[in-house]
Image (tube, rainbow, N blue to C red; front, side, top):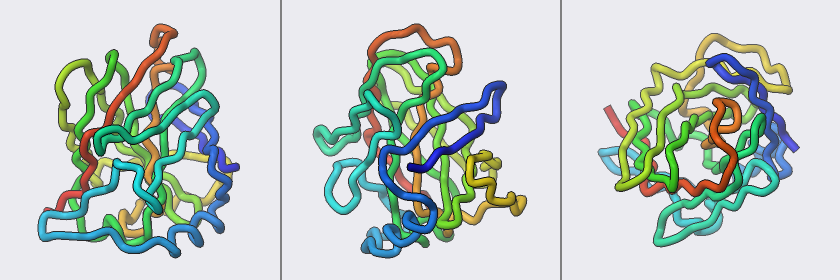
Length: 197
């Protein structure tokens, strides 16, 4: 069980990953994965749940499933609790890219944040972004905007994060920490891509 700590706004998020992967095992799992197909435009990160690239929920009560080639994450918002899903990828997946482009929609407005973790357990996070009701909206998350996301393993912060070293990507819903009203929510990732400069 791996716990990540940190939140760059005003609170400290504590959430646990339901996959049994401490950083050493995480690196081994990532190393066993086949490379994702790349084009001159970048790389598409799978959202369809096809093995071996299956998304994992990060907390009890979260259901991460694939529907119509999209990732759907459903749960009940509860105060003080984070929710979301994570994807393990081989190192090098994000090498040489400029930003992530994520297209989302939801059953209610919420705030999401994407973190990247390397094989040593170092975690950095993009700035939070909103997911809204209605048709999909695309958010641009620049790698240059990543900031340290402190966590339980207390890996020293080197002062920067190399996207090429990322082996796990986690999408976290922050509603429980931002005063979101309790209740059910489903948000959908229609497309998640690493985009070349």
